[in-house]
Image 1 (cartoon, rainbow, N blue to C red):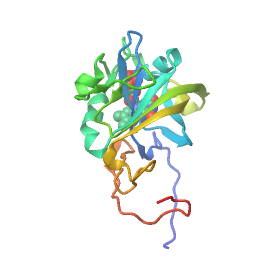
Image 2 (cartoon, rainbow, N blue to C red):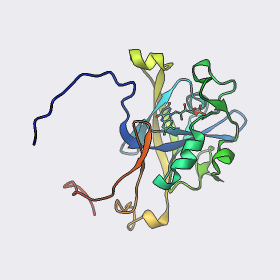
Image 3 (cartoon, rainbow, N blue to C red):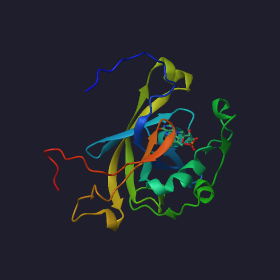
Image 4 (cartoon, helix red, strand yellow):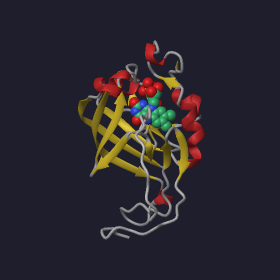
Length: 207
Ligand SMILES: Cc1cc2nc3c(=O)[nH]c(=O)nc-3n(C[C@H](O)[C@H](O)[C@H](O)COP(=O)(O)O)c2cc1C
């Protein structure tokens, strides 16, 4: 492999490419807020969601500890982008006021359909091929100079309590077919899909 040269830089963001989720959370009036998030990861059935303070989602999870983690397909990037300039916070926080507007009906604006959840109150997003109902275990305060400039944030530790998957993505039984499932990837604020060329598998792959 050719020798690499390195420079130090200070990128504003470190979004090296993670799947996009649409987080459903419960508003005060019982309606469901829906917001795009890409700072999340899973260990077992416990997920950690990175939420900025200035989001309605963080406010909602603090008040009502339930959510749905909906995973959109790559084809849904335009719907996701319709949600991008919106917040469920009214009034819009000062830090966001220039770029965001309040919207009380996020599903309607994005053209998405609400589906009643089975064990939590926030609704699922029907068009998303994966919907995971979850309960909040703990909100961990996050720290960092650059994070404070964004208003600070929380790592919301949530436990998945029910997983809904579109039948066509299920290999058999309890397995999701990696040849069929494809996440929408958020790569430095641009949307990508995986090329979906399999390179190999780890020794523990079941299928
Ligand atoms: C693709 C995408 C990924 C995003 N990821 C995150 C994230 O991980 N955490 C976060 O706090 N905001 C994230 N945002 C910004 C929120 O979606 C934005 O702050 C939105 O206003 C939140 O909605 P809410 O205030 O109704 O919760 C992301 C936006 C987009 C478009």
